[in-house]
Image (cartoon, rainbow, N blue to C red; front, side, top):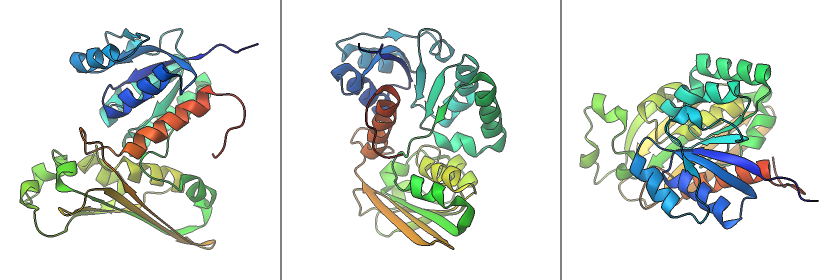
Length: 275
């Protein structure tokens, strides 16, 4: 006897939200897409037009978690997490958060953690554009040093708030590699909110605010993340070179695949590989 499909709502109809919706629509994720929402009505309409099974377009983000939805996937922004994550949990729905940078605000992470305990909801943080979070989490109490270096083409970093307060003009980075930032993940996610959510994910896994370096390299075509971890367990180093989405170079294709895999595990039955 088959079990009922999980019912999903998606917040954000950009690259990641679109890939999730298409995966559900094709049957790759065994679920039913109930609702979508994007602050851009045209983005919502364009996405729904591509789907065989048409979800409802919510009039506002807070309506996404109303029955019969089981889980809401946030694929929009850190501001979206601040705006709707708590209400999703209070409605006793689960949530997948892609914009993990919002959780480096200790007030937000504590409120969501306490609410999830009180209302019995689960909060999922996919690996996104990186890997190794399971290994990092397993040694979190034994880490002495941990850092992540993110290197992207200048066009991938365009419009980051960093440039509004910097003397560096992103359009002038045409010859050499430029180190734009070196500091904490908590500061990095504020200055590059659409680019370094990976730093927040590493911090959440490690249980500490990791050291972050952000570089702009005009000669590369990939988004590169190198994570270095050292402690009593030994040393780990992960380097990922991700292909950016052609229409949104801020986002790596791996981030969308990670979201799809996380939602698949939530919805599927049988043998599930990996943590």
